[in-house]
Length: 463
Length: 134
Image (cartoon, rainbow over all chains, first blue to last red; front, side, top):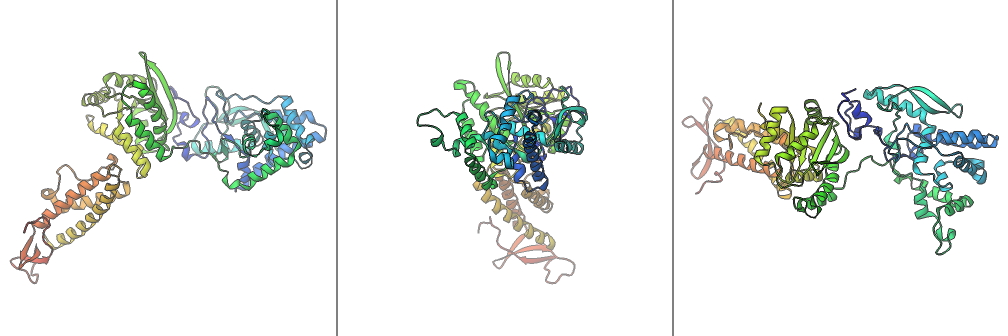
């Protein structure tokens, strides 16, 4: 484990344990300690995967889900309901939109409502589900995170093995911890409070389970929202002028199994278009150029909120320009002496030699880019950033501003290096211009411009 | 200049002119775009050979030897430097050619007992120096 005294903004599993791989190079979605990732496991991606392993996992999810039907038929409805309630939340995975990483299971009545589908719809009673995410189309409040959690709960055992394998490869420490519920495929039931070895959240000691990126989407391929928007026969369900109540659609679906099946058949037919979603998507080149253009046309200072616009453009622009060499962590606002300061934080993945040097020589596990829409950076601005670096960001910072540093300010930064071995470099509009050119032409990675500025700075430092 | 220097000269100038032409096209299209590392590595190899042949006397700039890849040189920078080198090569040629009966020749030092040598020089056909006023 690396030195944990330094504060990490939006800490992730890998950065905390000193693993330097960027997200783009890893197979799994790097979990955050404090919040969920806004992506979901889509069971359809497992089903359509060419990998036999993924297909087999999908089969085991479906078998486990359809086993509930078997329990119902044998009169064990309470057991079926309890299994469904336990399966409905999988907080070790850390996917969804929770800010606290604490999910809530479904209640017994909601579970009973789902299980009722096996009794109410003869086709499910007889043949079971082929794509269990169809439950979204019959039961209210079954959202994409619930589908994802149900899927993960039934294959949690596999995911634990996967997590251990990845941790071993990357050197992420694991420790004894308690997994509250673990589905046993052999017994078709949940084992409670299992003592297992897994990576844990260093503060809460909660276990963490990793999920392959290839299963993740923002929305499931079979989704209620899409069905409601594009496929549901509204003129048949609602009278003219009647408010479009979702519950009415769900009730209609229960009575019209064929309509739902034709939607699912369409989705199966168009499966070639179903891909996993990237965890971060760069903006298109055209958009980057437009943003740069608008940014360069802005006046300096605060007139007409120019500073806000400048900062807004830079957030999107820099996050895209520096990807995949630097993963964007967060945009921060803080107030110093009555002035609002905005900065961007990136995880230092040490993916290139320059970033490795920054990590080693300046202890920078995260990089701070402070945004200043001013015509001339002054000593106050440099000192502000310098003081902020002292709060645990190492000794390397970047000021993003409109013009090159005046000679006196450049000397100021050199003095800072001479006295305290701190490195503050400045990126001006002309550098952003070059970065966008590189982003467009792909001749070199845009981060080379930051490296260039750093080397110019180092050459000017006394040896 | 020796015979092998003329060989090196002609090879290098041919290569530099080729790259200069290619880079000029790129530079006209996007002068402020960076030259990629692949090109830069070969350009630097040629510049190192050129520095060796030109020596301090003919080198275009005392404090320039090659491009620093980390400085992210732009297409227009590369074109500027290559054009300077080509000019200096031309100056080297102009200083080592002579005209005989309207035809221009390299005057290169003859090897021992080389046939056709005149006063210790052998003459190899070339073209008129580009900048020479007639």
